Image (cartoon, rainbow, N blue to C red):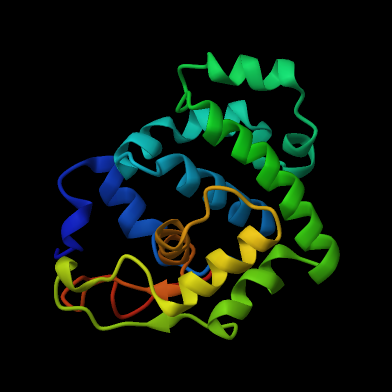
Length: 188
């Protein structure tokens, strides 16, 4: 079975590649999860984040944006000492800030899903990359998303993070053309 090169030989990376990456996500709680995880990944490997994903789910109340938006300084201090997540003060504070901004978007657009998918006109962009090196780190769509998210108060949402988010939640299909997942993805 041929997979995208980045999936490597790690069982957790292969399972993520085979079952999640590139599958269109329209559930707000799942979109919030990926927003937080992609921000946490900045400067680190995705394998590191996948290995800590369950720890993130526990630490961040299963990515309940309303609960996360109410985190106190004490809760943030506790998170900074939690070995089950990336213990970066700026990234943890960004998650709390982003929860509040996320709720604002939900209020303005009825759902984060409605808001975020507008950057690709509501349907996935299907690319046709031959190899991993062909895939860009950002696009005009991720640049626009980053700019708008920042305007709305989000943190750790640069164009590269936004593009990784778009790939993860299926806004773009960046499976290489030889990958068994290239031809189709299903919705979640």
